[in-house]
Length: 420
Image (cartoon, rainbow, N blue to C red; front, side):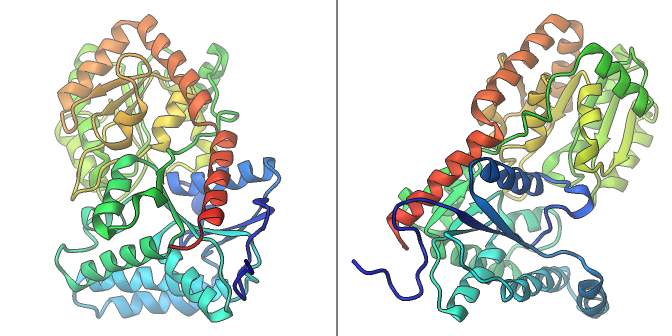
């Protein structure tokens, strides 16, 4: 059968070039964040597999800042509601991505947007150029629910409704959808009612070549660089400071941990809108010596914090319907053979085998976190065994090359299935 005019896809299933789209720059501020790291690793994995990757994104160039961001900031000052301000701000990045797409030939074998706004930009660009590309949409979370959880959208507002509609449109335009955990898949199916055979779950990957178990000397050297005592128990919480990440619970857990281990320190590597609230908790609970608020740490520098730590805590909670997916911070902790303490939600409980590759505790419970941490500090042999098993698990199931190959299979399935 003849291929429709303007359609570009390989006839034999071979792939040579893929297009990845995202409204937020994967290299911004050192490439912090799970989605950013995921895209960079995916591109590296594709390269190792012989597939070229074109990444179209929005870089905050001087031109973009002076012609769009700065005037936009002035415009948002006169907007009345936070919902209007959020929609306007997000729209600036979507419009810039659309402008950048006009410069792309769209001659790839497959297109892979990584958020609903990118999917809409791609759909419009393809229509404008009269080209049809197989589209595989990757979803890292819940666009609308996360904006509500972060206090940027109000449930029931017109902007909230439009954001949900944007998600639905993206779901229906995609030839296949890849979700990083099963609950995101369930959200897609519930919201949009699309054919479930076109939706798959592919958990996040981790760079197992960079994030490796440290030697004792490497751990000592990393602690020296960070100004940490070589004998202090160190707990790492590498999380952005937003409601769904539950960092305040990890801080509150330090009340009990510090009583049993006065030298223990919690490293909070991340920033966000909850920073002042968490700093107030630290001061109120007398934890200034026990909690270090590090702010945002570029991904290129985060490795020292993992190998300096004894335990990694991922204390996520459900917030406005948002549930943690396959946390990259969790996977990086596991890759460095640190015992991880995670909560019983989303992709965390799907990844960690309680008592074998980490410990799972009740979400929102600081004392449950404290109890797990104290158990691990009391039993170093068990902590080491959990870390070793965790490393073996991510090597087998979450390496970036294996992930890239599975993603290429999703591309091939989209090509074979055709459009919805």
